[in-house]
Image (cartoon, rainbow, N blue to C red; front, top):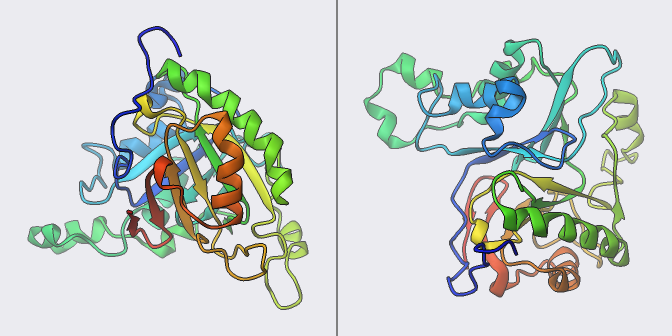
Length: 302
């Protein structure tokens, strides 16, 4: 580790994950970013646009509904008209992938926030607000239909904090862990997927069986670096997301399907065990566990 930036091996990891309702994982195609991701490209970026609406002072700001906005190294999907600049994003643990968010239209950011990120039900503390104010803070599915090509996430996602621009420990551990996960995932029967997701309706139809089930769900894995999630001192920080329809090796439903599991203090020597125990076996490793979340937003604790 960089001098003066040691890993904390004393503090209890369990419960060190900050509770959240949703993570927005923006596909930047880059491995590192400025310390504050909203300052990338002089503030012209999707993270800044989203935070303008739901961050402190934003028109949809809600202290009882925490939305975490992150950058990732995953590349964005390519629109049919390549001259149109768009950005892709994952929504987790809703397990939705939004392939095309036009960068020239703030309406698309409004549709993302209003249609997918706001709560379906408000915290009781909001009962004192006017009906108009409460309505503004609630999700509207009609807004979500404005976005094109939204699809379910079908791949296992391995997210590793590699935000060197924020903390040197993550900058050291992130790339090393990504390489080790990509090297060992095929041993557990998971294909390591790279490159942008193809999001045309034709491709989506080809992935379905005759009974409508997704024949690729949980069969592949994408490994990416992400920006700051908190807890630099626990590097390497790893989040594993398992798609809702994922099956275990026995053909039955995976025990962690539809969940996200946070691990801390992960080293390359732990990767084989994580893949066997958690990815294949559906079991949480207590010594590394920071917290977790279910698809409906329920926080997992040991």
